Length: 78
Image (tube, rainbow, N blue to C red):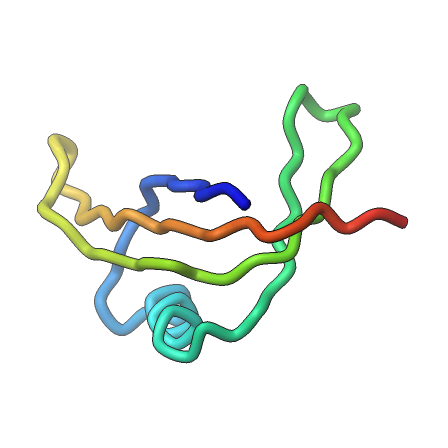
C-alpha cells in the first residue's frame, strides 16, 4: 500500500467537492487511473480509497486549493 497525495482546486459545493468529501466519509473503494509519460503512455489502474480531502488556504493566484490523499491498495491488471 502507498499513499498518493495531490493538490487540487477546491470549489465549495462543486460536484468534485461533494464527490471527494463523500468518498472520504464512506471509505468506499474506487478505481484510480493514472497516466504518466506523455500522450502515448498506457494508463495504469489502481484500487484504493480517499484517505483525506482537506481544503486549505487560497493560493498565490487567488484560487482555493485542497490536499487529496488516496490510499492505493493494489494495481489492477487486465
